[in-house]
Image 1: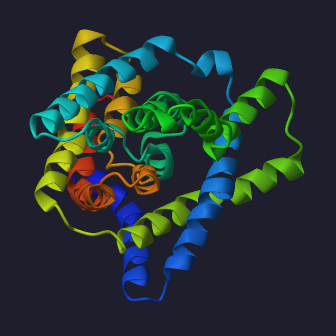
Image 2: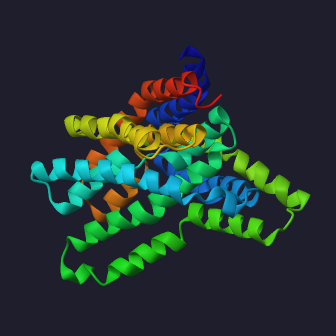
Length: 313
């Protein structure tokens, strides 16, 4: 446990540095926004492109793996939605809460952390889960929010969803990387060095940006945020473990990566969606804050359990 915890410490320290820099005013909101754009559109995209270009699409894409992840995530999504409905919330708010409890920060936090702790082989599995999150659940929340509103908003749903997919730099980078690999092209050394240097900024940049963005988050609606954080940090990895180890057993390492990814805190991009559609943004920001702070302990516990079980070395 201590050894695994010490491996995660540098990641959370980087988040802490970003938080302090923003909380003290040394790093402005504009600077945080600019850094987030740099990581999202350039550094993280370069990292994903390099990983995808070095992998075989046929070897990486595992329909059974993706189905297990999807089924377990849907279970948590539905359970959270039902709880929201029982509290009298409308469809849009229920969808946002379900997204908070079921979709983790596997893009900004998961890829760099799990690649270093669990090995480069984890990246292919994480990319499959990222694709499910972005393509299926990212589409679902937009459809539920817009569909629950007036009919005037209806015609724009397809265009909004399509634009979100084709302009998402992470999906574009993965697609281009696999296309490069499928073409059988050898990456020239200057290009290899370029994407390596640029992608190398993704880990520290993303973690610093997460911390800086948390400084602006509110702790309002702490009870609801606590429930949603419990859903993300306990119910989601629990459902994934049940599915991947008992119901539809996967190869141990693949199951370990899936469980570790599910244990990550609530994804930051949910706040952007909630703010854009003005659906409970304070509740989302509080959940991101609470789940990220709590994950310092919970992620270490999950990784330690997985390591002690011999599911990864």
